[in-house]
Length: 111
Length: 119
Image 1 (cartoon, chains in turn green, orange):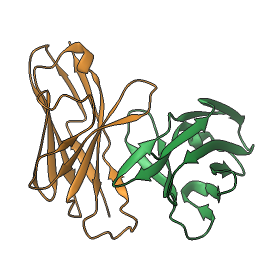
Image 2: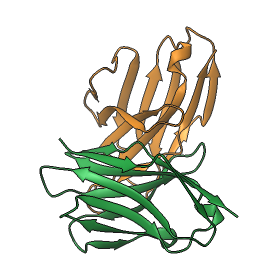
Image 3: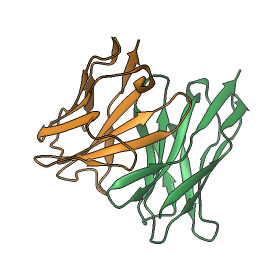
């Protein structure tokens, strides 16, 4: 069964610093992987998705993620954190027609 | 494009009453909609998959008689929490999949969520 594991329930960075949110996946078939962002009391917004095309995927708001099959990873990065990036981030893998989510990582950006 | 709305955004009800939450795809047709529940500081748990014109498929452990799902049209699915109790208080989020696959890869578009508080 497909699953994702997000390492670190809480990540804190300084404004302008590199953001790295980790996600490892488990899948018996080539995975479709997603990163979503959730602001307080709101739904989920898609940041980016991997669908077996390019391994480096660029998303919105300056985020990108790299699919590494050898490491079964799909980590999310952003070169320079902004205060507005503070939110909850979820990694997800498609399983049949469903999405299976990780437990989420709360990103805090300190001034 | 690909906007999903939910109504209401927030509801407070008394224990024992029923609450209906609507999920609408505003600019696309959605043959499949999904209902999720999110506990505070937790991830999203899929409750059920709703297909237009057919019965919903519930995930293991979800009471189908308590969480009634109706997907009567290609743009509307409803979740009714029957005889709500305080433990049903949660954040409910729906998502919809574009029938025509404009976004490709069967992407799900999420609604803004509904905060249910049962007193």
